[in-house]
Image 1 (cartoon, rainbow, N blue to C red):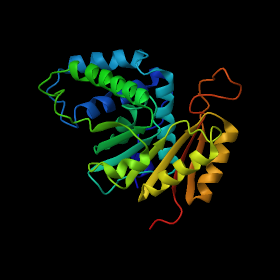
Image 2: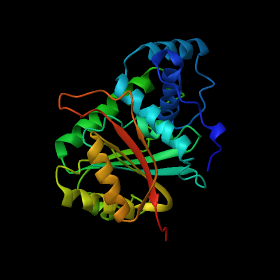
Image 3: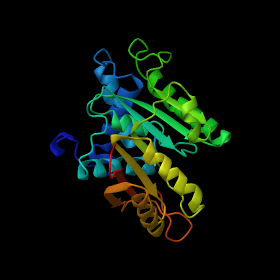
Image 4: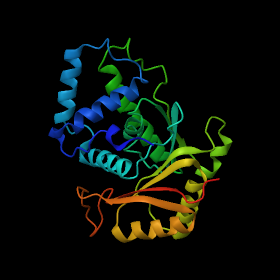
Length: 267
């Protein structure tokens, strides 16, 4: 577990430094954790300033970053602390807007992050791949290619169009994960299906692993947590996102709640 003071302080607005933190973390992720000392300092400064004042990821991703930071501090999370690499499973990822954010966030301490993003829908996975590739291209082409190579495969992110229960058929995918992430869990859509998804997510956790979920609705979030507890999960922390962007449906907003869950009885 990390000491709370070792984790960067929570930042909220674009002009408070959050953009710089995100930019540096993303740059480190896409560089494969290679040193950036050879990059022109003036170029880096200009890029940081441009990112800080831009809407490159928009407020939803900035707010998600803040919420991840908040639950990390409150639950004293340090997934994969004894390993060189963090294994992360992103379940039901859809078009995966958070595809670059998650490995950049969890890799801030210097660990590499192996992320496997899974969804049943081929079209959504295709969008996710293209979205991630576009982001990767922007970061890798922005600095000296001698420092960051677009062909070195260092980003360690895979997108898989399949049922998550079939992942054991893919030899390169670990059987246990340090982090399982589900964005906008959808219990109300089909309780039986989502019970299976929660159960599978918990079964994939390492003994010290953490399941992180976000939800659109207040009530749905509470019901999901109650079900997850019945399945063997222990809620470490749940937080409401006061900056959540409201959607057209009453009471529905982006990442309205974020929670971290551990196994009640690790094996």
